[in-house]
Image 1 (cartoon, rainbow, N blue to C red):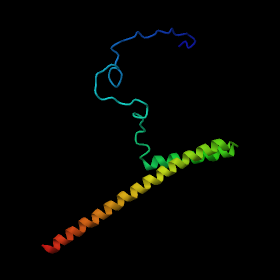
Image 2: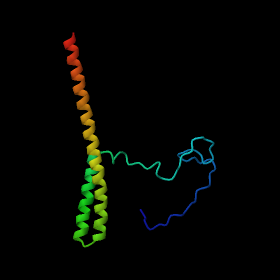
Image 3: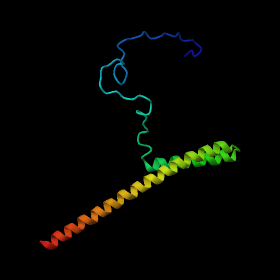
Image 4: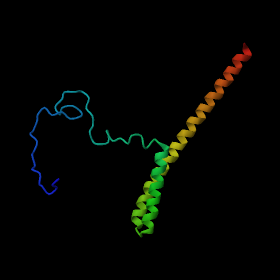
Length: 122
């Protein structure tokens, strides 16, 4: 292949019937979404997976150590702030997990008590 060959630029012809993901621009749909960029921002659940959050937190802590050893305190502080954010998220997910396990334990014990009462009454 000849990588030195220059490709000619061919502009696309303007198409009026070109549809974007949300439909045509001038559609008369009543649902109007605020398209400021935050609506469709997705992380594929990575912020809800406790293992991914922990891994990211440890990554930023290591980056902060590396930046500090390279003599860049500003970058180290930046990485520490990111690690702190992920630490808060990690703690939040741990609390949520503990609360859900406590609820299941309580409901399991209540259902077992109900079943023993029903057996005693019969």
